[in-house]
Length: 292
Image (cartoon, rainbow, N blue to C red; front, side, top):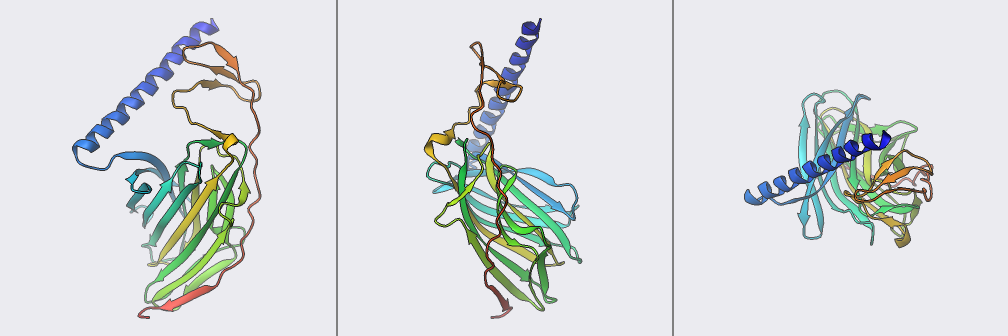
């Protein structure tokens, strides 16, 4: 009885996978006909304001000379914010995965508001037994004539390196504030994990990314020029396999059903580790009035 019910389930998995591959192939042909760069990777960007639910959407990466380029702008009238991004990514941790570029957040409202912006990039291969991370960020506050302020309270951070959904390291930890009384810019820098990537972190089950969490005054813009690197040991790399086995259950005795073969038992090797984020030292804050 159980065996008969399992066969239709496997058939359903096969049909869904086949349909997904067909849709992807159709999109690639359409891009080629229209002369657009071929999309070679997809990531997830999410935006939340004032502690509300996040709006998550897919962003596309196209082949560039030295990596994968993710570039775009999104205005959310419901949240009264515009987010722009321009990142160059290497999503292979062999020789170090890398995410480098700039994200910006413009607050169109008149009052100060809280923003939580996250990007998650998939990696291949994955890292089963632990990884190493390192990176840097330059935060720039662009202020209008009334001046402005970017801050974060105690227990939070303006910038965080994410490994899967966990924080691997934070920079510009609260209480933190930067700003000025007139038009101009305020800039501050921080880094961690030298020689890059040198800070031990957790295993990677899906990917890595960056989180920007802060409060920003109305009419002002926050820019984040970031670089994040992730590597691991060769013996701990494991390839993603979209046509691989269907895993059923959890724990050390989970069942693996292989398409075209019989079932086998899979023993989990190693467990995911988590680490407490370590605050980085403060860096000098530079404020430049407009016109200089």
